[in-house]
Image 1 (cartoon, rainbow, N blue to C red):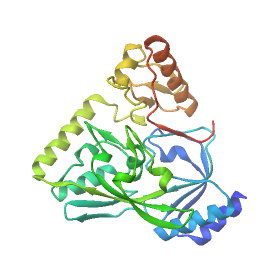
Image 2: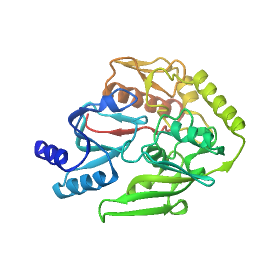
Image 3: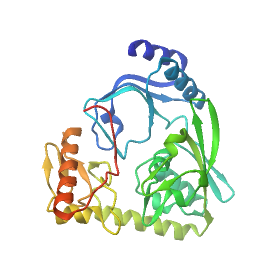
Image 4: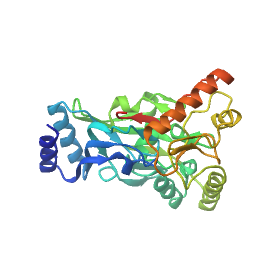
Length: 302
């Protein structure tokens, strides 16, 4: 079945289509088994055709961004995984707003705003994700989040084959989550910003980069913060108080630099990471009566 589907997708759309593609190549963890079919549509029309094909064949499909907040199981993912870095890469200024495609990196978005003297996206520097992923998780740092600056989001509903702009007020944003994924596939978003001195914007961005470099294991393979911060507390501080800095399981380890990071030391499996996550959660609950909730998304089969 998957071989037939693979051939049909290759025949009907433009873009990259690969069979049994290792997801480890598409996550910042460098972990993950193969997806049945990996697709990078070249244009939006290719995305629309692709979702039609999957719907007709009743095959699951999901969209992933840059894989920076993602842990994929060692057994991989069944069905089709779509990446929109090519199809949704628009960046355009609109007075004091910026329109950015779902596949645009947050770093590129922040630099684009800086180039045009627009303030409000400085916090995005150092968050290694895409616009689409940031909207899905309400990504944020330094007291700001994507919900603070987004004005509207263009989504595509494969069910009724319609594109629709959603105003910010109709989207539910919470701490490190939103309901945008349930509304459709994110294509692009409009961010309302403010005119400011580019030198001041640049200074703020450089400060954030410096702080991240000092406190986070940026050179290691990780998925960023593993856990959300409980109300009034820091997950990293909780893990450190539990004495788990440096704790290892197979090729995965709790970072010595920042305890809320689990790093791939070279040959980690998803099972290694999950074992560490479960140990941390269990000990936080039993020893400190704190329930830690994952910030990363886990997909695929064990």
